[in-house]
Length: 73
Image (tube, rainbow, N blue to C red; front, side, top):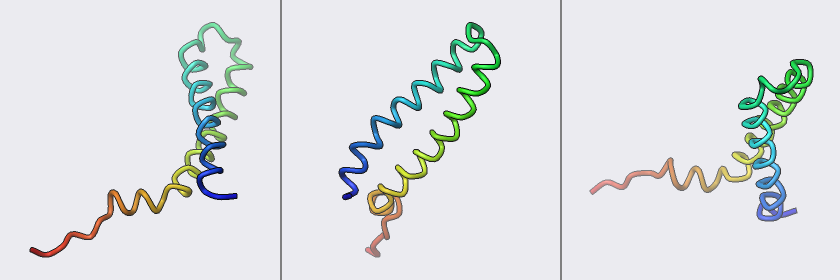
């Protein structure tokens, strides 16, 4: 699988995981604590793993954009 295909799959998953974290965080007062604790915690681990994979897949772009070698003038 190419990086492009992997990112096309990973990016929507990242959006869903992020929205889940945001919504469970915002509405935690309306969700039973047992459900909130499991959902928010488990999805948080998946979100962290997905972000790490996203960074890994985009590392060449990150290096070329943020870690450019400066040329001497």
